[in-house]
Length: 265
Ligand SMILES: [Zn+2]
Ligand SMILES: [Zn+2]
Image (tube, rainbow, N blue to C red; front, side, top):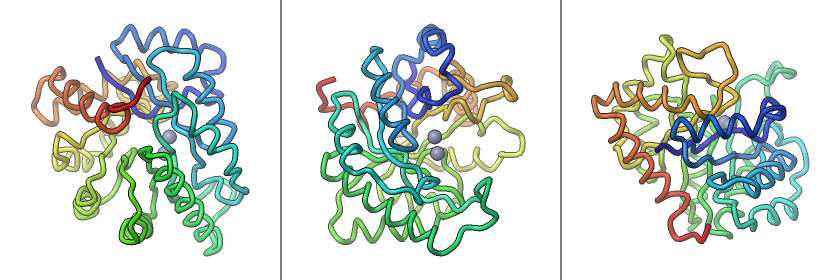
């Protein structure tokens, strides 16, 4: 049994065959799936899908790519209160080039910080963990999160699809956050991720697909789906030189501790 802690079943890529994708996931042993939102619409869709299927849960939030748009706090709060919402996410900072913008302006970067803090507060208010997306903005993200925590903010969560140096990883782990790895760890050009995965204490490790993106080998080049989590799990178990079953048990315990314990789902 595995838990896919980050899978966008709410995205268009799954519109036509959602039922089949979920059946295949269950058949391959993926018993629980968390669907993160990227903005209000996809958060609403995540809650809607979670409401229809056993073992499927939602995270609601606005991704930094949508920081320019006004945050509809009322709707977000409403979705946060849904019975099957287990996290606020994905939220964070992303300074990677946008498709349509060659370079982010300082104002856009500031907007991302404001949006991130606003949603950290919502997570704190509803005592939910956060799913953090961070791309090419590591220092600013840590600074923002540290400031929030230093001011007495209480928040726990996962750095999803982890990227960065060993030093940065250590500083994230000091904050007691979890670390999520995805199918891109199987790519030959990402050998450095293997070193990072070994550095994470096994009680802080989470598995995710980020489907429809980041398809693991040998399916790279096709749409990713939650059933392929088994490939990533096997690959990581290989790096850690432990049995796939032991990795599954450890990461399931971690996902349960972060997202599910103490909830009446
Ligand atoms: Zn992300
Ligand atoms: Zn994602």
